[in-house]
Length: 354
Image (cartoon, rainbow, N blue to C red; front, side, top):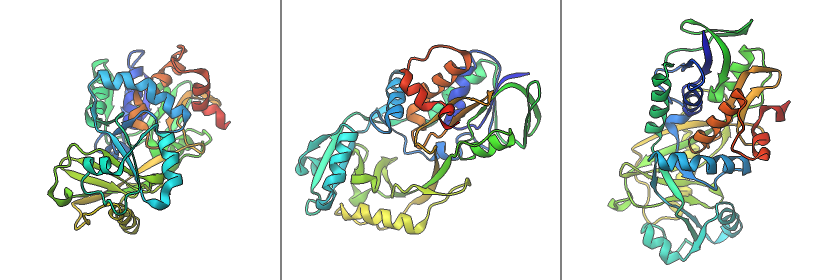
């Protein structure tokens, strides 16, 4: 008998499993050959406390201590840049992200390929950090195993039925007291297997490309750059730059791949602000970010069946919210009092859709 059977081996499933492993036997079932294969393995890996709607920001703030104290964060910085036509979007982003406006010359001194003839506005946040996403996932998996739990790959769930307990068919048959649905873009499909109404999760594609370091510069200490209105972003990664058009195109759940046209349009928006053109791509790929209808996470028991637990709708905030989101799920499952304020907890519960 398993106490907590978790469907999905991305950051949501692993972090929730680690929290719940202190209270009973945990098994994590991942359909793919490796953990974090889909959205979790294709993340921008940035922690920015002010990024997201209010309930997400509350989770970010509650996660900060865990991530800093665990050594998962490295200073990166976030720079917002805009041309002359983007004043309104720039001002909105500065306010939303609590950024400090800087001079154009200061911006160019930080990122020397910015084009001073196009750059009109710039702002900086020093409270943005790279997340060591691989170590974070592996540490959560180690916690599960250390507490006698299991983390299993190549386990695609084909049947999910509630009798006295849940009977789950995958590579093997499992019996569990509670099921946690952390299947990313597939959470509504998992709910359907269980006879539970969907909450309306929408997977949205985001394309990315890795380009060589522009102009031969050492980019390691550059901040992540964000185009006003989130029209593109560029982030240093292993001596190269990752550039994304920041699109959010609704698509069916699948193993995502980059859209060449959308990627080209995003690279053009990036190039407009730079003096160095993009001459070649080292690689390109895409990930799916999963959004609830109101754009924030779905965490906690299903009202119609309290032994079916949602951990869904991470929407690109999965890593930076994972310590607090997983703790909230564990608190709601075990009846503990959450550290989050009541409004934030209510904004995250599945009952808001019922």
